Amino acid sequence: MLCECEVGIMKKFVLGVLVGVAFSAILFVPLLVSERHDKFEYGRFHGGISARLDVVRRLPEAVGSDLDRSECTNKFLEVKDATIWVVERHGVKTLRAE
Image (cartoon, rainbow, N blue to C red; front, side, top):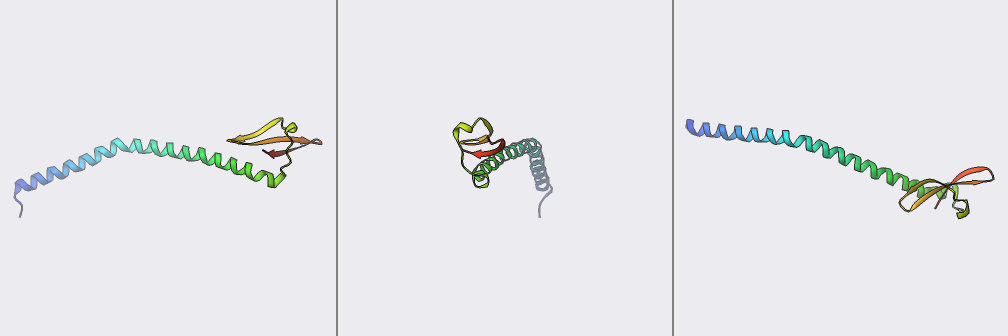
């Protein structure tokens, strides 16, 4: 059986732990929210780049790959090392990937 002084010490210890946990949570929750937002934006940015690269890679099989460098006058989209050009042939504008 515990005496009164041991119970008082345990209560102080438990109270100290609870106050420490609460204080830590108050300090770190704003940091975690900010970090979550940063990671979301980072993933969204790189997902957009991946989607654009996917479009550039699939474009030649959809519209053809007969690109003449003299026709390349208007860039439509450029991602990393890939470029989509607006090409006009016989009055019809189409896209070609390089």
